[in-house]
Length: 304
Image (cartoon, rainbow, N blue to C red):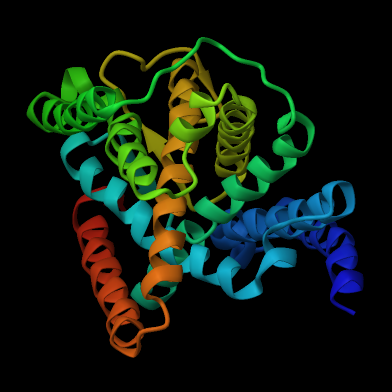
């Protein structure tokens, strides 16, 4: 029964996306506000079914619980970047629903798509590239490299906070350098462990996942009534949809950050997730953090 549902999700996702597009073209006010969210969840449903059909694996086929945990964590993870944007001022939100409950629900459901979407695209590309070496260069991972990466990650974040007008692209690099050493040291799935063995398939899969996700993010955003706009210090030219063309390069390392963050999160869930204290504290703390960031977005990033 589960396999049948997963296969049918391909048509459910396509139908929902098509219906959303038709309602948008017909200028239905509800869909103007919610098109981006509907489009992404439709795509995730479609991509999950496609992965199951092509490769025999997907997020939902592996674990429905894990899928929704990743979606929930995705909100708080993206909220970290929203906090950085308060300093960077690289994007702002426009045309959002006026009622606060509806607007905050929109934040939550939209941000919840980030990690599931990139994970589904990673699975898609890994089905074709996972067994290929596609090596760039040999990499020796030792304590020295781990220390250099960790320090580099910290420096990236400090520089972008100190001079956001110049170092703002480092927000898409810093967490790779910070999280990958942790995953490698703890024995979690990591890019460092794979490239150390000459396996670059996941790296390229994530790069392609980031590029395709970036194109879809900007495409869906361009047509949505509720959307964001960019204002970049020195990349602000030659726009494709709402994004300056060079800005698309940021989606590639962002996919690597998502992989590292999701890997660390899932390892912590498997290690501590069964403890009742953790279960009791985790969800309220995340929701409080999300609500705090939503409030700051309303005050500083949302432009009525």
